[in-house]
Image 1 (cartoon, helix red, strand yellow):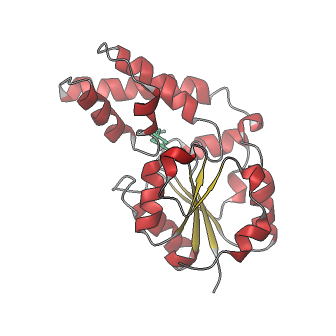
Image 2: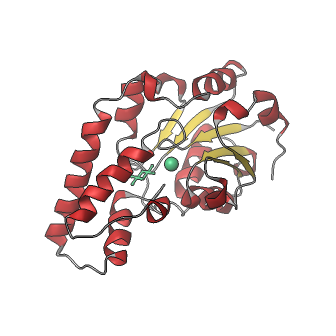
Length: 217
Ligand code: BG6
Ligand code: MG
């Protein structure tokens, strides 16, 4: 049985989670809401529209559909000003090495991201060609924690879900991977990722040998 590897993008491959936070903070300030760090944790992995719905809920604010669309568009425009400045230096430590090793051993690599900006970011940091398959916010209808994004990725790389290894930094993403029946690896804040099968603080702590020994769920 062959393994397949599925990577989330924001907060796993690149350190864009901080840019999303800054942009959402600014958007929330428009309706006088101060978004906290802990609330932001719950936005990780969540689609743009669902994120804004959550924030409006926390703020007890209601807006027209027109205003909603405007807030989302402005948030994205603001986010993209950070993305435009990204370079290969924004790739998180250890990622390139692990991607290269997986590739060298001939295993398929997929991206499983909620972001509609995923292709742009991969191009900016110059690692687009390492991915066999890209599934992103443009190709899914159900946002994480729904497992759709990962199940489509597994199908496209032709690997059974229980042989797929998913790397995630978000609660919603770990939940999606677990629901898909995949092996879930949490990166970063272990407190928020208790449901993950394995936890690491960074890719520099993950060896390819460890990944090779993982057994199907
Ligand atoms: C996820 C991020 O990867 O993508 C979320 O963790 C973000 O913070 C979501 O809201 C959607 O991204 P975008 O770029 O389409 O707004
Ligand atoms: Mg993420």
